[in-house]
Length: 362
Ligand code: NAD
Image (cartoon, rainbow, N blue to C red; front, side, top):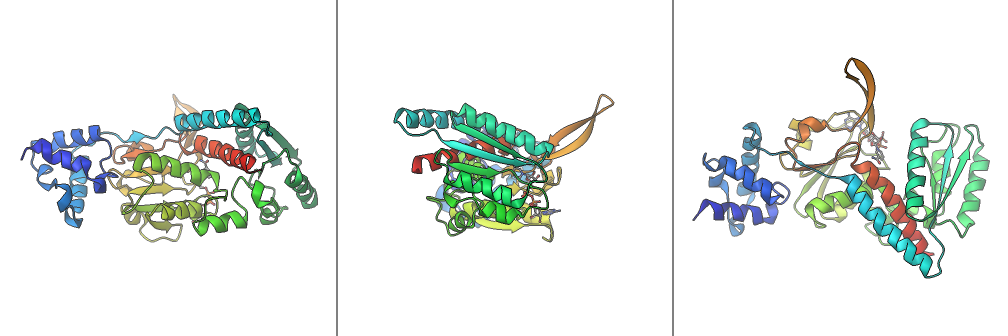
């Protein structure tokens, strides 16, 4: 039996798809190892796959990593994926309007002067306009009363030109975030924060529910790498927030992954993370996840957005980084999202997708 045939089997085995997805990369791993025997002897035909051969393949990949034989991870281009989706949403919007229906209407409420929020809202408005939506922004003063906020949301809830309502978080401390987010009717809750939408997601009934935008975008990127059915794969999520960690867990579970949610009280986090075929980091700690936390070949989704100070030519500058140490992780992972240009653009486009869905249902 030729070596070439053996590693063809390896490439074809679905159980290995998360470890050695790209046939070109696989060929390169094995070409590098072929002369050394270590790798080739563990390759197994499809019918004899078992926990031993899978473990042995992992060992092979660790070996390849140590020997510097691993090629770099695929960088998942969230910006390009988002641009494609945005074009599809624009086309669907044009069709809707051509059929005499109202444009999707998105109302964004921003309270106060938080600079990061201003940037996020500006990007959302720009994307909504590019998709052909009716984009409305309500800017409220920092000291606005809760009654005024609720009254505005009440008006938007009953406005037939508005299909999606979003209150940019965080909101000033004197306002009750839960009361504000729950006052948006579930049918227009395009952020997916209403208890009705959360309940539908958690119970696996995503049809007709709004799924929070960041987790929805992450899932599309994971599906693009690994397919829709994640049976047999271990997913580890670092972070248990209601906005990111928990809803991603529900989506991964629905896709048949075996899911572990970690948080600030988890013991030996690196060890748990190393078990992940899919690793999602949503923590808010710059470059916390190191290369040796990552299982070779894993799909790594970096949700974190952190500003750090770096020195460039003796000058201090601010730079955006994720929760994953990209420079290290890229040598171990099979695929990884960059920051910026990964999860961020997908989050915005999923907001547009939810708003379009709402307009189609109206
Ligand atoms: P959060 O603060 O609500 O939750 C952070 C989670 O991380 C918590 O569950 C906490 O237990 C956990 N955590 C904190 N320190 C830890 C540690 N040392 N070890 C393990 N777990 C730890 O944050 P969030 O809203 O979920 O956001 C997380 C990050 O994602 C932030 O950087 C945020 O800016 C970013 N984010 C990005 C997008 C996007 O579109 N790209 C969207 C939402 C959030």
